[in-house]
Length: 374
Image (cartoon, rainbow, N blue to C red; front, side, top):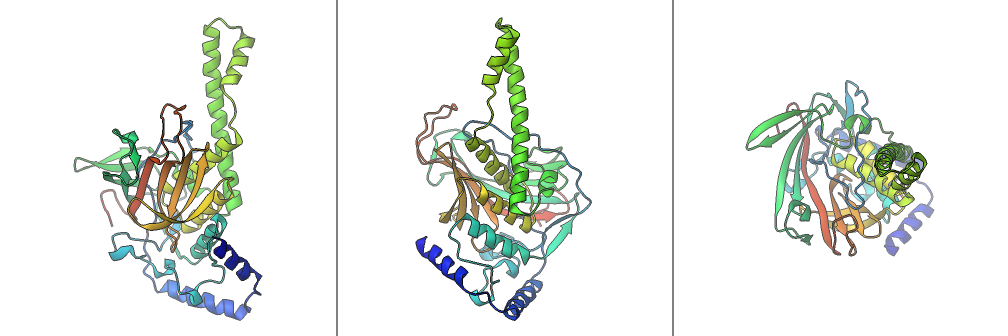
């Protein structure tokens, strides 16, 4: 890591290249991208997952009107291609002499977000209609939450889940016993309309996330206050006594909890929605600005693919992380793992190394109707 930082510092100290050199490099990159076949592919996790630890969820995202056409990144990865190669050469790691000058060795979360933004800026964008569907194939590890002993290390059993979700979030579909079932409404915690309303500048995006976190916390506190006051009154307390007891029962989020909610909100959005590459890069950038978020240069996901991670340890014992392709900067999956023993104050005792949740995104593609995989 020290060597990477030294290389970055030396690179940043160099004089900028001549404008004509930059223009020539960009022209080569643009020509390279335009030769690629355009595909409507992106990345989406298939299942809504409960938040661990102190058990506070963000639900009821604000419903916004979705415009008639939504811009998403056209080039992407079709994970059924041999070797998992990108469907668009524009997202491959280019030879060093052909890379945009902004790319740098990655030593921290900010570097990763910067490179993701540079790569996304070179992507051509396509549009698809709100009535189209995202097909997502995801691999899940069996954990204690699924029954049986807690998971440590590689799982003995994994499951594959397929799901179709309509872009306007008005329907989703799954296969039950080989039969496709289309269901009205949405079961997803972070709604498409809210995601597509986010700015693509990291600081502005993070500010919007904190606004949502604060709004949801205010609702949580109001509900908890009302329930606690009713219970106190039933026990014969005066109105003043009941109010004081209710206020104690509904404390505001601590700074650490607020940052945890923000990290989870962004991660849930990447797991549960098709995203334009520029928006996804901005989400990495917003994550990098959350206190406590760190970068790890070497990791392996559930599907045994090499990757990097952005992670944050919440409450001192539970590490939440997203897996990222270090060449294309695509989202690859999510994991929650205990980094030290926990006494189970939330009702679930954990041992160091125990995995609470783990999934890998295997394939994601936009299709015209549920049931299709291409």
